[in-house]
Image (cartoon, rainbow, N blue to C red; front, side, top):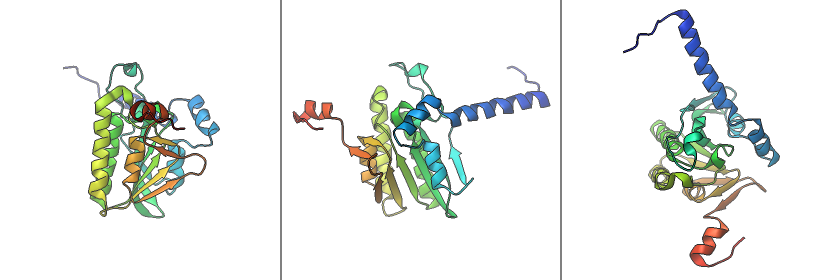
Length: 217
């Protein structure tokens, strides 16, 4: 067992390290990814949450979380938040829980860690008896994580059904939402779509053609 000196200097260093990690988390994957999002006429996940919640009244949950998957190069790409920002706060003074896909990270696709963050915030909303809002802008299941990602969506669907009629569930479609990113909103109480930007679809044209033989746009 290694002994650590509990000195003011060491504590300041630890706090500074944590603050640096949190700043990296808030900055996301970089300015080029943010510029690309803005070029599409879309805001980032954090910019959207800032508009939804009263000023300074949003508390993030599990912002430092990262995935633990390997293969397909994932072990070399482990960004903080894992592509979704979750938390709770006040909207016009009332408690609201929310999650927002970050399209800049893995195109907002859902893996195990990403799903577990959404599970947690949905459970918190149900416990508090407060609305949950999903700001959706994601590519569906993260195919590199396979069945694990699909199981994550299963947990979201289960909570959508279990919370139906218990708490308000609101989905705001703000970009291309495929597969599970369309199924879950379809199970919620209200679905809003941003004109000219939002899309909801089961899967892409290539998959439809391989399964049904149909060619769709």
